[in-house]
Image (cartoon, rainbow, N blue to C red; front, side, top):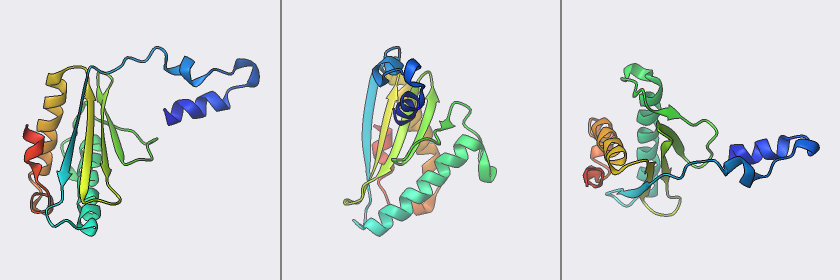
Amino acid sequence: IGLLSRISRSSNADDRVSLLDLISDMKEMEVEKEVRLNVLDGSIQTTTQVFGHIANIVEDACTGGNGSEKVTEWELDSENLEGVRVRTGNGGFFMLRRSLHDPVISIMVEGTSPHDVQTFFERLYNLLQRNKEITGAVELSVLQN
Protein backbone atom coordinates (compact mmCIF):
# COMPACT_ATOMS: atom_id res chain seq x y z
CA ILE A 1 0.00 0.00 0.00
CA GLY A 2 2.89 2.37 0.77
CA LEU A 3 4.27 1.97 -2.74
CA LEU A 4 0.81 2.52 -4.23
CA SER A 5 0.42 5.66 -2.14
CA ARG A 6 3.72 7.04 -3.44
CA ILE A 7 2.68 6.26 -7.02
CA SER A 8 -0.64 8.00 -6.46
CA ARG A 9 1.01 11.13 -5.06
CA SER A 10 3.69 11.25 -7.75
CA SER A 11 1.21 11.30 -10.64
CA ASN A 12 0.70 14.50 -12.61
CA ALA A 13 -2.20 16.56 -11.31
CA ASP A 14 -4.13 15.95 -14.55
CA ASP A 15 -3.54 12.19 -14.39
CA ARG A 16 -3.90 11.81 -10.62
CA VAL A 17 -5.31 8.47 -9.57
CA SER A 18 -6.71 7.75 -6.14
CA LEU A 19 -5.27 5.03 -3.95
CA LEU A 20 -8.62 3.23 -4.13
CA ASP A 21 -8.40 3.24 -7.95
CA LEU A 22 -4.95 1.65 -7.74
CA ILE A 23 -6.10 -1.19 -5.48
CA SER A 24 -9.58 -1.78 -6.91
CA ASP A 25 -8.43 -4.72 -9.08
CA MET A 26 -6.30 -6.35 -6.40
CA LYS A 27 -7.37 -9.85 -5.44
CA GLU A 28 -7.99 -10.38 -1.75
CA MET A 29 -6.33 -13.49 -0.37
CA GLU A 30 -8.68 -16.22 0.79
CA VAL A 31 -6.61 -17.46 3.73
CA GLU A 32 -4.91 -15.46 6.48
CA LYS A 33 -3.01 -16.89 9.39
CA GLU A 34 -0.87 -15.29 12.05
CA VAL A 35 1.40 -17.13 14.44
CA ARG A 36 3.55 -15.76 17.21
CA LEU A 37 6.93 -17.16 18.09
CA ASN A 38 7.37 -16.64 21.81
CA VAL A 39 10.92 -15.99 22.95
CA LEU A 40 11.62 -18.50 25.69
CA ASP A 41 13.70 -16.31 28.02
CA GLY A 42 11.23 -13.39 27.82
CA SER A 43 13.98 -10.94 26.85
CA ILE A 44 13.59 -8.12 24.32
CA GLN A 45 17.33 -8.38 23.65
CA THR A 46 16.97 -12.04 22.70
CA THR A 47 13.92 -11.17 20.61
CA THR A 48 15.98 -8.65 18.64
CA GLN A 49 18.84 -11.12 18.13
CA VAL A 50 16.59 -14.00 17.08
CA PHE A 51 14.60 -11.75 14.75
CA GLY A 52 17.88 -10.78 13.09
CA HIS A 53 18.80 -14.46 12.62
CA ILE A 54 15.36 -15.28 11.18
CA ALA A 55 15.43 -12.22 8.89
CA ASN A 56 18.86 -13.23 7.55
CA ILE A 57 17.72 -16.81 6.91
CA VAL A 58 14.60 -15.62 5.07
CA GLU A 59 16.54 -13.06 3.02
CA ASP A 60 19.12 -15.72 2.09
CA ALA A 61 16.29 -18.08 1.07
CA CYS A 62 14.91 -15.34 -1.20
CA THR A 63 18.25 -14.63 -2.86
CA GLY A 64 20.21 -17.85 -2.53
CA GLY A 65 22.78 -15.90 -0.50
CA ASN A 66 25.33 -17.38 1.91
CA GLY A 67 25.16 -20.76 0.22
CA SER A 68 21.44 -21.13 0.90
CA GLU A 69 19.15 -22.93 -1.48
CA LYS A 70 16.95 -20.31 -3.15
CA VAL A 71 13.22 -20.68 -2.64
CA THR A 72 12.12 -19.84 -6.18
CA GLU A 73 8.62 -18.71 -5.19
CA TRP A 74 9.88 -16.21 -2.59
CA GLU A 75 10.68 -12.61 -3.54
CA LEU A 76 11.89 -10.15 -0.93
CA ASP A 77 9.86 -6.93 -0.84
CA SER A 78 12.42 -4.15 -0.51
CA GLU A 79 9.70 -1.46 -0.21
CA ASN A 80 8.69 -2.67 3.27
CA LEU A 81 9.39 -0.68 6.42
CA GLU A 82 7.63 -2.87 9.00
CA GLY A 83 9.86 -5.94 9.20
CA VAL A 84 10.59 -8.49 6.50
CA ARG A 85 7.93 -8.92 3.82
CA VAL A 86 8.16 -11.61 1.16
CA ARG A 87 5.88 -12.31 -1.79
CA THR A 88 5.23 -16.04 -2.13
CA GLY A 89 3.70 -16.36 -5.59
CA ASN A 90 0.04 -16.47 -6.60
CA GLY A 91 -0.35 -13.06 -4.95
CA GLY A 92 0.41 -14.38 -1.47
CA PHE A 93 2.90 -12.97 1.00
CA PHE A 94 4.25 -13.29 4.51
CA MET A 95 5.48 -10.68 6.94
CA LEU A 96 7.88 -11.13 9.85
CA ARG A 97 7.80 -8.52 12.60
CA ARG A 98 9.24 -8.33 16.06
CA SER A 99 7.37 -6.73 18.89
CA LEU A 100 9.04 -3.66 20.36
CA HIS A 101 7.47 -4.28 23.78
CA ASP A 102 6.95 -8.03 24.12
CA PRO A 103 9.27 -11.00 23.55
CA VAL A 104 7.34 -12.10 20.44
CA ILE A 105 8.04 -12.46 16.73
CA SER A 106 4.90 -12.29 14.63
CA ILE A 107 4.49 -14.09 11.31
CA MET A 108 1.49 -13.09 9.18
CA VAL A 109 0.74 -15.15 6.07
CA GLU A 110 -1.83 -14.58 3.35
CA GLY A 111 -2.39 -17.12 0.60
CA THR A 112 -4.86 -18.32 -1.97
CA SER A 113 -5.54 -21.65 -0.24
CA PRO A 114 -5.03 -23.42 3.08
CA HIS A 115 -2.50 -25.65 1.27
CA ASP A 116 -0.40 -22.62 0.19
CA VAL A 117 -0.33 -21.28 3.74
CA GLN A 118 0.53 -24.68 5.26
CA THR A 119 3.28 -25.21 2.68
CA PHE A 120 4.78 -21.86 3.65
CA PHE A 121 4.80 -22.74 7.37
CA GLU A 122 6.39 -26.13 6.64
CA ARG A 123 9.09 -24.53 4.50
CA LEU A 124 9.83 -21.87 7.13
CA TYR A 125 9.98 -24.47 9.89
CA ASN A 126 12.45 -26.55 7.87
CA LEU A 127 14.66 -23.50 7.34
CA LEU A 128 14.62 -22.34 10.97
CA GLN A 129 14.90 -25.68 12.78
CA ARG A 130 18.45 -26.10 11.42
CA ASN A 131 19.68 -23.07 13.38
CA LYS A 132 20.58 -23.71 17.04
CA GLU A 133 20.40 -20.01 17.97
CA ILE A 134 16.77 -20.04 16.88
CA THR A 135 15.69 -23.47 18.15
CA GLY A 136 17.13 -22.72 21.59
CA ALA A 137 15.43 -19.34 21.81
CA VAL A 138 11.88 -19.68 20.42
CA GLU A 139 9.17 -22.32 20.32
CA LEU A 140 8.97 -23.35 16.64
CA SER A 141 6.19 -25.93 17.11
CA VAL A 142 3.56 -23.25 16.37
CA LEU A 143 4.73 -23.42 12.75
CA GLN A 144 3.65 -27.06 12.56
CA ASN A 145 -0.01 -26.61 13.57
